[in-house]
Length: 230
Image (cartoon, rainbow, N blue to C red):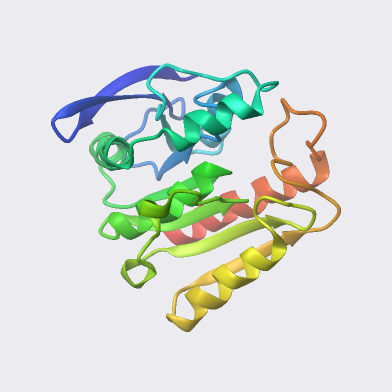
């Protein structure tokens, strides 16, 4: 359903996977999908395809620029994540925002990210408050000291998904995020998923995937984007 594209990225060129409904992207609501630490893998591309089937145009920028890490090598994935250049990432994400606005003709976008992508979704929402109006961090991590978001700049509604057995983005961390955003007067909701751990949405990882919780996450997310981007 989708294809790999190039798009302008603040003086450079970004790449990513885009999918849109059968009638094309014009006038559809736009979603940026931000990868886990594995890279732009088939799971992320299928997530874009699912958004297209639901009526959205979805673009997943390739933040590793062609590199993907096997799901059996978390140490290598962690190394790739920590080696990211935040300046380059910011350009790629902002360029993806502009590309979706250009293709859809809509001035606003939603953003969803998983694991490190969830953290970057929050970062992007604070850096592009002009366009990002709905953000969904799914068990999101922000492990980079220089990527701490300035939540005072946030102008997006937030729906966070948190796994109750997550040791990487703990339930306490999710509650701290909710408290911080609430104190700033932001529109935030955190949904907690019992009896599941980190990355429970990734069907390519049977050791953590939980179908019922994954479908609930999906349904809540689609409803959220339809409400906040309408």
